[in-house]
Length: 168
Image (cartoon, rainbow, N blue to C red; front, top):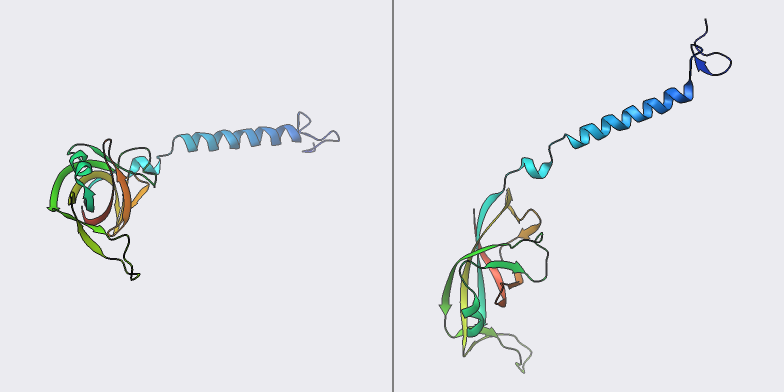
């Protein structure tokens, strides 16, 4: 008895093409099963609490009054995964009047000048994310680094600040 007969059937009963189709279906079903039952990287890695401070210089007083403890902090320019970077836990006034960047110096230099009705703020924020080595990632997508100068906002305030300290 031959394994494949003249009609291309295995043992005279089933076509080779049918066997190949069944094999492909079984491989696809196994791949789908393993993919859906595998642990996702995002769920296996636990987030940690990350506390950081932002120094905002030359913030107008009315904006400083709108930066409140308990408000969520967002980045105006960069995506943070649709969630707040964290919650504001403390707001301290470092200097009044604050320092603002001089806009119209005639000698081509830039400098900081004291500006009336402004303050310098030190804002403490607590968020959650991943800490790997010396790298901090809030909400798993927002890279946080010391000396990064960004546009931040809360539900009532919009200001520029620089990350000056990160605690883990």
